[in-house]
Image 1 (tube, rainbow, N blue to C red):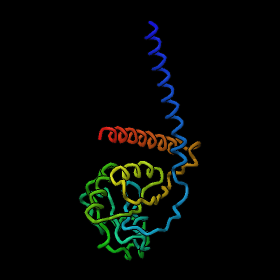
Image 2 (image 1 turned 180 degrees about the vertical axis):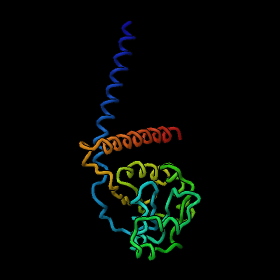
Image 3 (image 1 turned 60 degrees about the horizontal axis):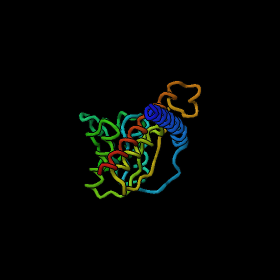
Image 4 (image 1 turned 135 degrees about the vertical axis):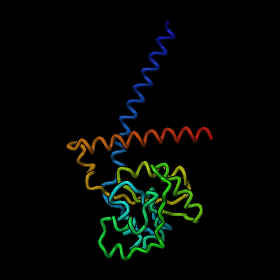
Length: 204
């Protein structure tokens, strides 16, 4: 009977410790969501823009036009979409679109999620001897994207280049339920992958 009580106390202690750690991790995750554009102007071998938001591809093209890298990989493009169609559909000034060199833009068509983005990019990086990238995605998505990319490419130099969706302002989380829900959702996705990748590392 004493042993059963001990096990119950241990179970509830571990349970509440786990809940405490999860709750503590949420504000840490929140403060790691970028609030301002990066000030890092270092050039890289390539720019990687992940599909999924209106601001990401335009930012990747802008960076390419500014000479921040010689190549741009847009990961997660629909298999039927052509490069010209993709460019024409972007909210970009006409001069930016005209300036874009299609020979320097590669469309990755295999990825359907963040894990796929990392796998697709890893294959491309290896084939093209890329040692540094500028990663373009939404600020709330960046922590999880960086986690996946770092797992697949531990030696790659990754410069985070977050973009800021018009419908997401992290500082408005108290008044905006959609913003609050998105932060929590992204946090638990990040936490799940962090734990899952930790298990994979231990099994290797």
